[in-house]
Length: 492
Image (cartoon, rainbow, N blue to C red; front, side, top):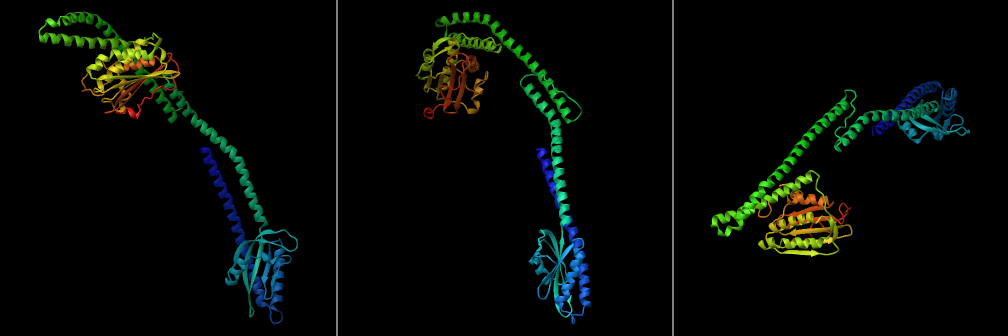
């Protein structure tokens, strides 16, 4: 861009230089010609006043004056002369009188004693080539006879040659300056852009995770200051990330240790609670209700510990697949049957719609855990309406969509639902599960297979969760067999 701007400035400067030179040469030629023509006209006017027009006709006298003026003009080929006589134009030998434009003739006719100028093309009748020139027009006054226009045609050969020299010089200068200017601008741009390019490349490597990357700093200009700032930023970022990694590692270790340590006392408490629960029929009403609530909360606590242990395995990268060939439709049917008791408690009907060959290589335990979480959530938040489960497959993948028509959630919350311990409505009473880790674990299990778990929801229109799995773990899936957004017909 800078090179283009420089070339534009160069072109405009060259044009102004040539134009100014042309104007100056033409103006100098005009002033010189007007001065010379005025002197000649004054001499001719003096001769005309001194002549005895009684002994010679006006036409003869004008012819003599024209011849005399032409003789002086022929010295050095300075100018040619045309006098509008009483009978016809009187001109220098070999000159075509039409070389005098009509415009200047009209101006002289009405212009008094003023001199007028205009460029013209001087033509000849004796075989000489046409040449550029300048016409200076005035008038002679013959006592007792009238006013006779006189025109001087000055040749501009020398001025034309000067203009050609100026133009050639400008073109030669442009031809020499153009590559030089281009080279200089390129070197300047290269010198200025090289540190910026280095900064961009270094920032990209830092963004890619190479926190040991540093810029080479030279000098003390603004670019050097930028390099020092980026190096300081990289150092601070690396230090903060190390702190966060250490903290995260301590937190994961703490969760894992606490989960394991709580297993032993939880087992003892469960044994005692089971004894109380089995004998609750012999207890008074209040202790009996206490035993039931204690059993329920122990179940939830045990589920939370299981989820925490599962999350800690994912965080540590220790989760592994135990894949085997199964029919996904059959696996979904088994899980739907397992959720029937919960569905009946909520007066909910689970509708299963399966089609196609859904055989795939998956970890049944992990997939059943995903399905259990999706179905229990749909039943709990479906407000007693039907829950629709759709199973489809294509050549590369199988998919399950669980659709409810309950409270739903906003589009902005579609990704938040997979966050750990996140709840769409903190005030909503939980009656199923309650760890807040179910969807997070479900997403981890789906990604462990190389699949997807997507969420869609609208307030008052329910929600849909779509699980897409490759037929073999880690297989490439370009398109899911099911849409993530349900058809309009299902918005009931």
